[in-house]
Length: 261
Image (cartoon, rainbow, N blue to C red; front, side, top):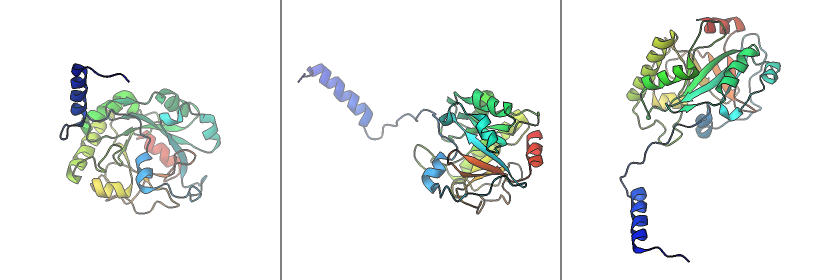
């Protein structure tokens, strides 16, 4: 067994104290890759994958959302399964960019889908303004080509700790409004807000119903109660099996209107 010298022992002890001393604030975790709905599924459950709505209806449009967890996506496969729109993760916080974004975003468009990008929010890492800029600068913009949906803001449970990121409802609403206002100023469109009723009503409880379309997450056969103030949902994420699947609440022509602006 190798023994440490007195000097080495002292250095090791200091290093341990630097790590473990109570009251020493650890740096925030690096922005990484959390898929849309990953924390909602963790806290609220996935439900029964057989308990899903009917697809191929004339009053709804079927779609999917993807992130780097799916890698290079076979878009022809999903087109053949009746998916006609896709949302692709672009960014998280102000430090993460999806390395598969180009293949996923351009590939969905090339196969014929209407596509959009989404941002996974980390409200305790930086301001809503900063994260909106990072999102727009890294794929989250909008163009009036009739095939690009407004960007989506993913608001859900904190992957790293406190459910509401250590923020009051008022502070959370201010953060969302800063992101939303900045995105609108940069693109001319209000971002879609993705969330669950449970998380939103607990952590935000703000009224964005007059400006921001709602994308609600609920893994069941029905949408259920909507988050505070919204009386209509635009998108519904209803399962993550075998991939995140969604429905647009309306006919295909209405989806085109949303894309056109």
